[in-house]
Image (tube, rainbow, N blue to C red; front, side, top):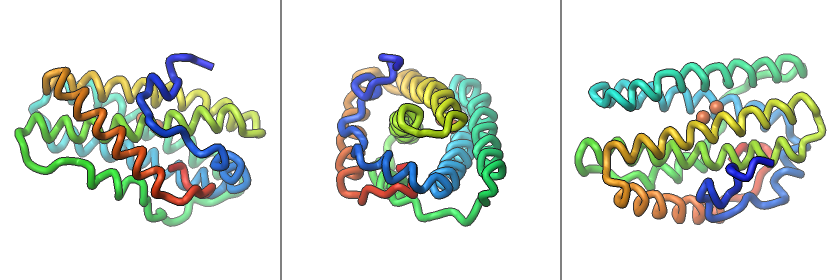
Length: 201
Ligand SMILES: [Fe+2]
Ligand SMILES: [Fe+2]
């Protein structure tokens, strides 16, 4: 397994509960549906960044191709569902993201606001990357195993993009301090949530 993708390097403070993968394997339809929504939200959150901060040229240039990648992930999860005779149902309440959004600070300069959003995106990418890694290592279905491995690498790239963009708009020290705070909050949120196998997070 690629060492670069260890939790240590992703910065995550709390590893996923080992029970998650066992439950998740039993609920593959729920996981795929929830995953499809995660990819859809990833694409729309990148579009929002571009819509809200059009003057941030480096960000717009880096994020525009990511929209297409996330949309492609979404399409491919839909394909996996279809192939298995499963259907893409209603979106479920995403408690993880709802809680994380509360960590985003309101106010401050426009650059600070952008950095808050970039770090929030980086965090979701890092956790998704960790979960995909776990799925790719444990899932029995060979096709999904390969799929999750590929996505793990892709989301790790997105995570790096978001962090390096944040450092363009605010000093490195500020970004690292804020990033650490995000990581601590995320670990607390994860600890407070029930371990469920029908959710990606
Ligand atoms: Fe994705
Ligand atoms: Fe991503």
